[in-house]
Amino acid sequence: MWSDDGDIEVRDRTDQETMDSDPADSGPAATESPAAEVCLEAEPTAGSPDSQAVSPSPAFVKQLEEHIAFLASRLEEAERKNEQTLAAARAREQELERVKERLEREREKKLFQEKGRVFARLLEPLDNLERCLAAASLSGDVRAMLDGVALVQKGIQDALASVGLLRFDPTGQPFDPECHEAIGVVPVDDPSLAERVHATYLAGYRLDDQVIRHARVLVARNQT
Image 1 (cartoon, one colour):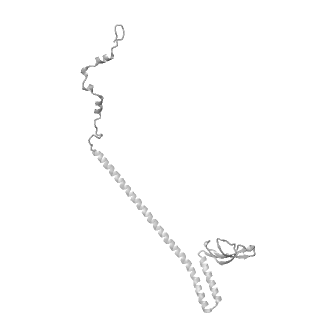
Image 2: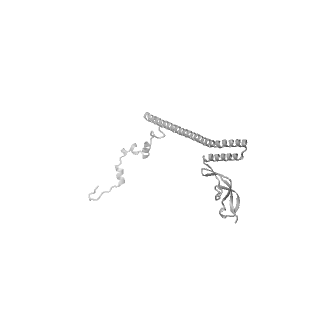
Image 3: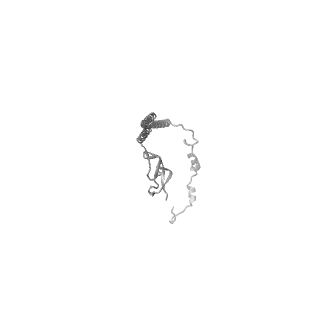
């Protein structure tokens, strides 16, 4: 407040606060401590461990049951698809096994037919050999027997050639270890004959251009 001479009258702040306070207004509500307010706010709720168990609502139970039924149906569908996949795989495996067995039977059948064709071609030379021996035993004609044996030999060679088995005689040809097997050496004076097949002891055979038996030969070797 202002004084008569215009100066500010300053009161003691402590005294003013003492004068403004009213003892009649003090009571339990005014004297309650902040700690009490915290205790009131921390009362147990439905979600706290100290609260009693709350039963789920019927709507929640129904929703949970529907979800479980949905998961069960999905599981059943997955198991059904798995069984279908396994059944299809087993069917394919059985089909492959049947194809394999059929191909094996066809291969064996074809092999049997090829062998029958080769042996059938050999029957005629064998018949000729039997007739040759029978005629030679009756007549005693050695020349006729030799001609008959040569005819049988040619028949057998022709039968083998019809299935791709060819005889070769490398006499006079350069020695080739891929086709020839040297069983001896023959010395020669002519250098042009050196390292050539001097004589064939046993003919070789090729099957479809593949050597299946090397020709056994004598090789010429220059003496100088």
